[in-house]
Length: 409
Image (cartoon, rainbow, N blue to C red; front, top):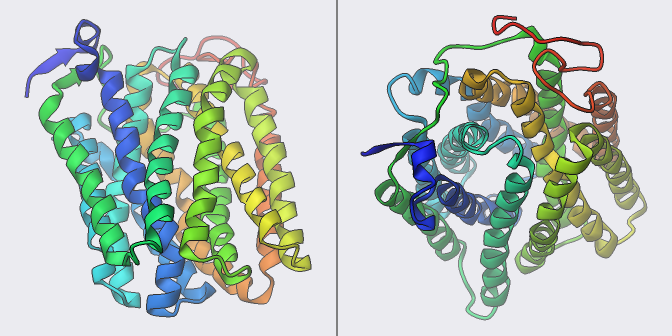
């Protein structure tokens, strides 16, 4: 494949530029992953009789590749990041396409592990490429648009699912084949249509752990722990507690992604204007309120309308997570981006490996308690976010640090 310097690629037609590749990958991933998520709870309950225990174990298995994302550092010694990202995206699509062929506990765990390897390795590389390819002054706005493109792709696929699921009496197999196949097709197209883009700063191909990135690591850890409760148990509550059907769960996702598609570009501009500190504080305060409201909704049985509204609001707050990416971009040495993306993804998934399984048992005893625990995690994240300076730069990563750090620090 032809290798092109990033600066030279700006002269290419729009359809062959690096940002277009980022947009296409952002659209492809949700076609597989979001459709898998929309159908998952109904599929495992109807086809395999899952309870909170089995769903907890499923998500624990799903997060193991995320915990092992640090392995990306070893792979990029032999393979370019762009190639690895597209291969991983294709793997996600292929595994999603055949999900319905394995309607048993063991089979679902196996195919979930394969799709998760593709998803997590793609996400690790994608985050690295975004921070390498997007200029710092425009990164928040561009990341907002990338989130909007991904939300738009999810919106289209979910709208089709809602419109056709009952009308054509679709099967899980048909939907998984179409959505996963579309993701695979886009990944193959991107392999063929785009050259290999070379960022100006060569990336270190070894483990990077720097003390001055400590706050970033802590925020990543809490983000992973907190997000697991939302991903695993918020949607599961909709089906188990309030009896959402497939088309209702999918409609809920449509509202969520429609809101993100409209709001994410605005949030990107807001992060650029107000800074990462204020954006993350706003996100975590909102999440504390949402998780406490989840607990009240479940405990007092306030109905599916209230629960669904909270779910959409939860998605909007989570879309601000790209502020954490731009915070790291501002404090990082340019050559640290790829290895630190892998390390951060592993840190993000430390709690994800054991938390879903453990909370599956808590769910049986006290579902509301799971959401109260999530509110506590969001409170910890809020305390950490207050340590971010208004203008983070290398050597000024927290409100307690000053000066310019040496690359080896």
